[in-house]
Image (cartoon, rainbow, N blue to C red):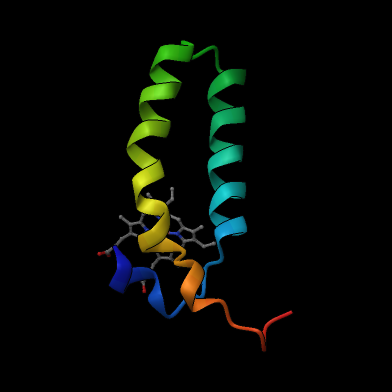
Length: 61
Ligand code: HEM
């Protein structure tokens, strides 16, 4: 997962936005909160692999 996203310079706020949209969509679709929490719990540990804070690129505004 880290390799697949490394060159994309995904920032932590991008990751949060994507997960936020996903959660909003699941809520709109009436998915039970317990299932949404389970999905969130599976995605959260991926944040540092997909959007490592240490790779912040200051040249990208
Ligand atoms: C919940 C967060 C995310 C998950 C679970 C996720 C999962 C994945 C997976 C499984 C792949 C395929 C990896 C592979 O081919 O080995 C992938 C590729 C990719 N992801 Fe994500 N991703 C996430 C967030 C993001 C975000 C935030 C972006 C960009 C804004 C992004 C952009 C991409 C792109 C462009 C690829 C294709 C890379 C390539 O083939 O060169 N992903 N992602």
